Length: 160
Image (cartoon, rainbow, N blue to C red; front, side):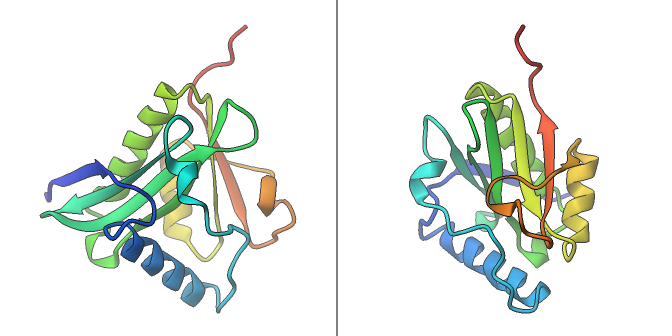
């Protein structure tokens, strides 16, 4: 099996931008040009102390990315911009990115991790369900979006 390496990388850098652009293009194709509700994030939201952005590398080539940022309060993070290039899918990059970001979210003190995906991404929904995420009511900018599927995973138990 291929060895996936995970590296921290600024959002919008020359290494990460081609991946996020490819993700945006794929989503436009899947959703027939619909741009969705998730506005382009500012790079600063993925920086310490509130966030992190990672790139997955296969043979030193960037093949995937994802990040976390603060979402609705100080104990909830949002997983954003999860993407793996088609040629690198099913090699473990998405799971490696999610595992690393969940660990980082815990270290940052987040108790809950949320995300938004959609019905035209059944493989993403399956991955998230297999990773312990459950469907929740749409939140934040996705509240009125009928084409959004929002999910959540509890990382830490509430403190009493």
